[in-house]
Amino acid sequence: MLTRRLRIIKYRGSAHGGNEMPFLIDDHGLSVLPITTLGLAHQATTAHLSTGVAGLDGMFARKGYFRGNSVLASGTAGTGKSSLAAQFVEAACRRGERCLYFAFEESPSQIMRNMRSIGLDLERWMRRDLLRVHARRPTALGLRPTWWRSTG
Image 1 (cartoon, rainbow, N blue to C red):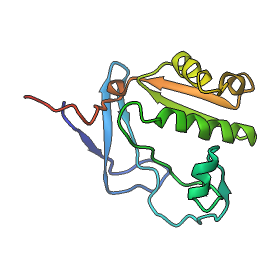
Image 2: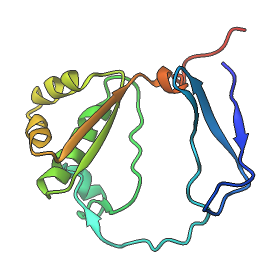
Image 3: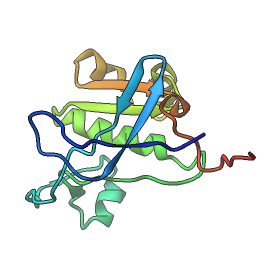
């Protein structure tokens, strides 16, 4: 697979960055994945949110993580990344916040079934329109797992 990048010289009605942007060519045509933030001048909040896991919140001085932060859960298969993500979703939905869950390699039905097995009923949040699950295969987006290596 080739990595391709596109440089946009002028984008009508907006400022633009000089960086190259990744893009995909598929059966729907050309899709540019723009880098939308030119600067990093946004204000950081000091508000905290619970992860939904008391022990993990304790690691964050019993306050949880900062609102607006990105949280990356990393690990090999079976280490609980999906269960942790579901706990974050559960906590946010209990607060009345809307969640968008991006899933790779599992269908929404599989996720709902698996999370029921650990006591989380995420379907109720879907029925209340607080949770939406977007499931795609990573390869459909041109992404490959880290273990994959080209032989050619």
